Length: 424
Image 1 (cartoon, helix red, strand yellow):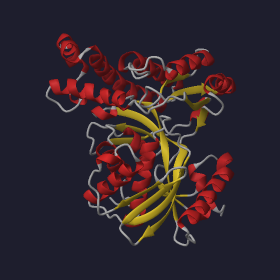
Image 2 (cartoon, helix red, strand yellow; image 1 turned 180 degrees about the vertical axis):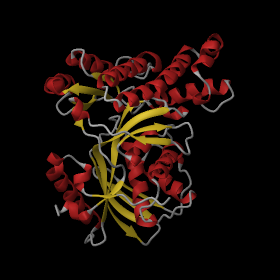
Image 3 (cartoon, helix red, strand yellow; image 1 turned 90 degrees about the vertical axis):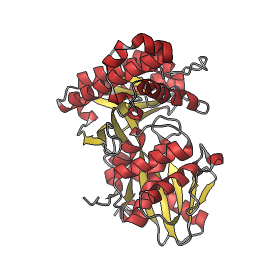
Image 4 (cartoon, helix red, strand yellow; image 1 turned 60 degrees about the horizontal axis):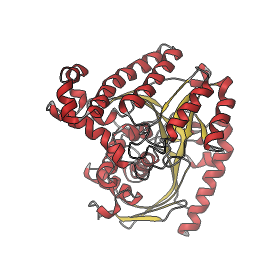
């Protein structure tokens, strides 16, 4: 079945109260594009890819598990024109220019952990899957905070994929395919062993439950939910942690889970069950260590919790939803153990954030570690009547602007209608 190109006006992507700000933001980006590339902008097209928030399924996607995630109203936007030459040139606000030849797509080891690696990897992913690629020049600007747990890298990858989809494939590349290509770029070119949740939530958009049992054909269900109707706001709090040296901590989680799975001669934990772990507990503890066993137990219970979260939302039982969020956070802290790095126990910003949030919520709402963990952000569902106080208490510790109140965005990566930027 052909995929219909997703072209949206600003009013579809952002809250009504932020439209004036967004129009100014887009117009400034267009002017910056024209200045940087010395272009009259006659052939420009505009694209957007959102950040994402993980709601349930902490570190389950890389073992073919289940997740509940949503795209949010923070995004990366790109002003783009096609080029006849086989070169992709990308200038991001505040960063050096990225440039690749689209006929030179082998992995460059010296590019690992750079934007150039992602640009090259997405290009190769499109080409190897039989999609068309071509030259372009782009200027990007982002309000997806780097290291925020909102997955700025996935949004960047999805943005590049969306550009290729629209410029050279009529906008018809399935968002699931774009997400898979984005993951390929992050794993093989950038050098980070992430799962597929980040890219899928950014590309598909909306509030989605995803079952990765078959990674090539994940089961995606859009969940129709409005947190405002439950009297709660979705907040992300930036605890100002540094992710720079944490890749080994992230990588150890899937590595330990996969090592246990391989003991049972399967490729991921989803192919076995918790009972297999319990029956072989002593052997697994001896062979892989207690932390690996605890992380596997988290995986199986977290998978169940995703179903509980989805079912609670479907029956409008928001208290049951909040209870499962708190359970997820508790499991991540005690069993998954991704709230702070064992190699740097002096810095535990997430633990501090969770403590302050628990105090500010007064046994209401819910809070948990957000995303990959170890540093970065916590997530909270805050009753409206406590929102002002919650924001004040968290910003006392982490600074003004550290508490972000988010909205769920209904669309993932898409082209933005130019006339909506002009307010027409």
